[in-house]
Length: 150
Ligand SMILES: [Zn+2]
Image 1 (cartoon, rainbow, N blue to C red):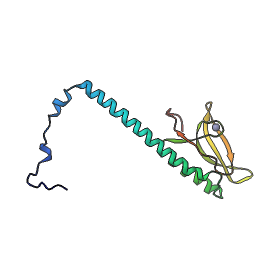
Image 2 (image 1 turned 90 degrees about the horizontal axis):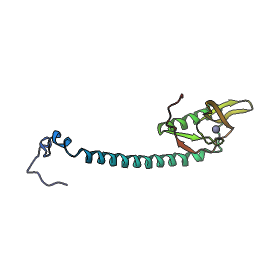
Image 3 (image 1 turned 90 degrees about the vertical axis):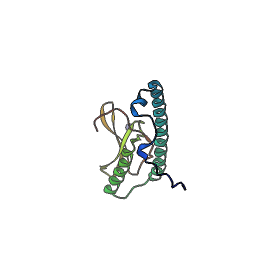
Image 4 (image 1 turned 60 degrees about the vertical axis):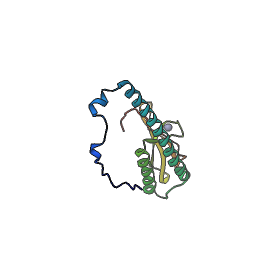
């Protein structure tokens, strides 16, 4: 709690060198500072991203081995999971080949509630791996940086 009420300083007249003088300062030092700052920020973001990934992963692990009881509900589940992962730049790791993939539910003969598959591009071709009637083990990986067709 501040008790000073005598002076009501105008914040716009705060002391400090004019902008022009500041940029003409030690540009090299500023560049070093920026580099350091961005490096720190990147590390912090990586740490947070990793925490988010682990938090989502530990929750999704509880879905493993479950089925929602209908094709539509399973599709909806896969869609919700994918939307969440997308928002955080994540993909699921295909348990068959280890590549980043999108979790989907596809209709399949003999599986009235559909099957969970990993949808990804393998050797340039869209490929579906898996095909389980219950949600597979889910491991998260970062979305590949390379821009490709979605
Ligand atoms: Zn795969």
